[in-house]
Image (tube, rainbow, N blue to C red):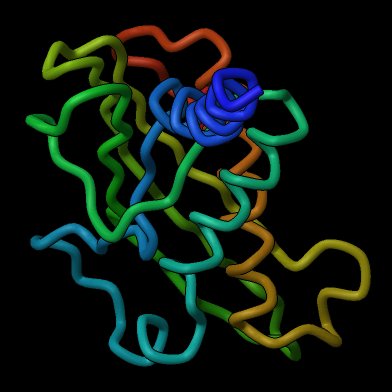
Length: 168
């Protein structure tokens, strides 16, 4: 009886660990590139770094791709790791003159320190339907939502030097 309960407890505690071991670690927040010139108000007010991670998790989950969120990622981490950075976020225009927004991201996918794939992604938006009623951060949020979907799709079949989103 004790052996049966012990085996069940071991199974209970090891299943989540196995799922985590197979998941792809992604950073949250996604860091801004050190050499980026993204406007300070965009960084402070729009939360693109947090939203991007959330959208990747959401769309990867829809594709049954296991991801886990960690504080930061780097190529030397064990397991499957996505090293991401937001390269640029442009917020020109406005609701009255028309939005002209874009966000650019780059990423590298490593497994146990070995580079498996890499990509660049950019999404542009003018606000979509009723764009004139949306704020700048809302329109930039549309770009990172689309990038989150692009990245999740790419994670299903990662390749080297992929151009995603509006770079295709």
